[in-house]
Length: 107
Image (cartoon, rainbow, N blue to C red; front, side, top):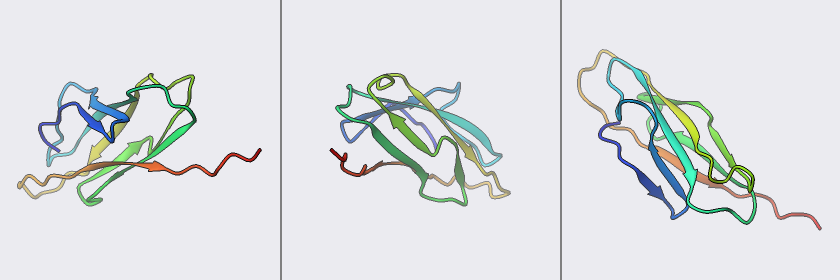
């Protein structure tokens, strides 16, 4: 993960760096992503957080983000750990945020 800037995902999530560096290295390390909603949701919203290449990095915590009306604009810190290896080549990996469909509310 290199040169990460603030990113808006699906016109809903805003993701920015919360740590003092915007990258991880082949030696390992952790980067914090600050995730919040752009606006107040009408209902609870949940997002699964994943990495496209599990050999390069893992989501330490949390792997599911839950936004409700009372915490909708409060940023949640997602910790991404680079697994580190002996390979000196930089390998990019991507962090994915997938909206989790909620079951319809029962009347």
